[in-house]
Length: 81
Length: 306
Image (cartoon, rainbow over all chains, first blue to last red; front, top):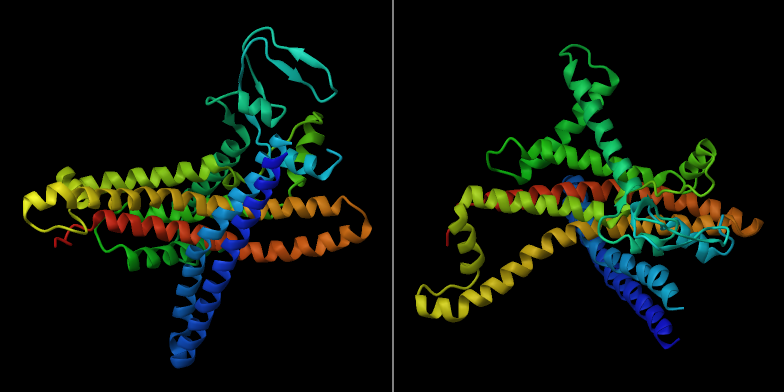
């Protein structure tokens, strides 16, 4: 029974910390985009394109965490019950 | 459908695995009876436990079927448009394909500065194919399996519609890109060039005794880890996004099934998440294509001798 609780705690940490880091990262990314386009409005679209590319790349870390977290919750945990 | 929610979720994560169960294997049928197999039989797994017992040579029919089908649709559609492309007034579909091709060509030209005619078509194929596979995620989870159940009359038929939520598919694509990367590196830089790239970067002192005793091994560890992390992060990024996206759709499906208030809330949440997911789908297909092109460009970089 002990391992089951740990699995859920592990999944929660995996998803939570990943989300925390990405939220800060996206916040700064968005902020820099606004600063950049405020300084040079004509570069707005180009900057936005690159921001979405970086957002896609940044997404990897928390999403891998969420994927493994969900695997823990829905595959590993029921087998331990 | 399965009564409790965990059963519903478990049921919806089960790919349609086709594999061989050994003789004397007890199969727990849905109606509680247990049937023992007389001899090795190739069959569809009824539960994830059976799919696991099928071992290595079990094939996910649904992921393979949908991905190959979508790939064929993509190639046939683009082939037909290319076949009767007119310089005159373009038809609707032709202008759409031209838009896509010129967009992808622009992106690839920005990244890839070497001479290889295979990279832009590869980029186009990856972008369109991955986008089409991801697009299946917007179809509500239960529609197609239930339609198939009605048609085939077999109540226990279920398959996962989105191929990219199957880690085998995304890692398979990622390792194919990895194989291309190695092939092009060796083709452009030669085997020695490739090995030098792995062992001489980033530290080298020019004096062989220092190099070969310490620096080469440090470089090797750093470079090999960087090399291996490329396909794995490429594959798991797409898998993680789509798997989490579909998981949330399944959770909304559970909400729909439980009571009026939760049900209506589930519908609006489902709608909101689907709209956001449109961005995620295109973005992940675009990122997969851009990274593949970047890796190809790195494989072709010969002139950075330092």
